[in-house]
Image (cartoon, rainbow, N blue to C red; front, side, top):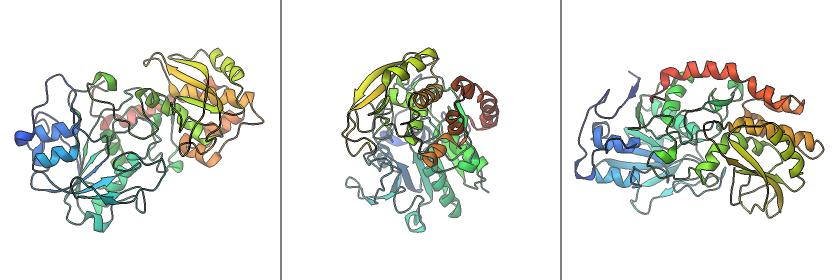
Length: 411
């Protein structure tokens, strides 16, 4: 029987409680511990006696920064294969670059790339595996490929009657739900589900939602984070920040990402290849003063805008590499009040108004990020940005009701 199971810490709703031996220690009370810690201290029966494949990357570490691979092998888990998402097992590959499968020099285990010639585990990759663990740090924004990778793993596992267990991690940018909801007709690997730009969910919760929305038959389990509430920001958890991708290097960049990523679908740079990717935008022709006057007049909460200049370097920037750009830098001043999706819409509208002759869309790319053509068409028509953002309220409310059965953490 295919089902979704939730494996909770401290033996609640557990598949069975076990001790992990000398390699494991009980999570400290009052501290936040990711799913890997909970699995090995409280729910080892999930993996005991199984031939395990692990889908992870450089962020797959315990609360002390020790890699999942080391922890699992020290606990006697029979790890037989590794799988990597976009950016590869070490998280160093450029965005969008195909990654080849290889061998892990430390363990001798195969590392099968799920971002290369195949995006899903093949029959050969799954041979000899009877449990798949997924431990990936999501970015908190709709446009990120790790959910797509997780769903591809779930689909392949279902065909082979292999259980999938997500080792959950906090949403690094927390609880708020902001932005428009994707039109399912525009679902792609960078936006798979009908969720807002900033969805306020963990990867484990998203996997549960995906199973329902996509009609998957996967035998799915989630080992939740211990000691975390979704309102607790990442830098208050005690967990180290590990960049989930090469151009999301700081927690600040993650907070801006649900908005500024939209500029990837325009002829402006988002700072790839610079010192502050996804914290600034720019172009050689940008009239910084004129754009700043417009966005500052909007009085947006929780963010400051300032003029900047930067030179993105190769291979990070594919638009203006090695060119000095006039730019606008964003700095978050109040997390509780900041809406990065609103900031991006106001910036897009301001740049279009000031530079109608120079500003350009990449329509196909922008629409897949924006979840459809409506946002682009409204900005192009000169619609009031505040009205655009205000019009998202009803769809966000419907989404919050729809996601409720799949949430695992209190506010």
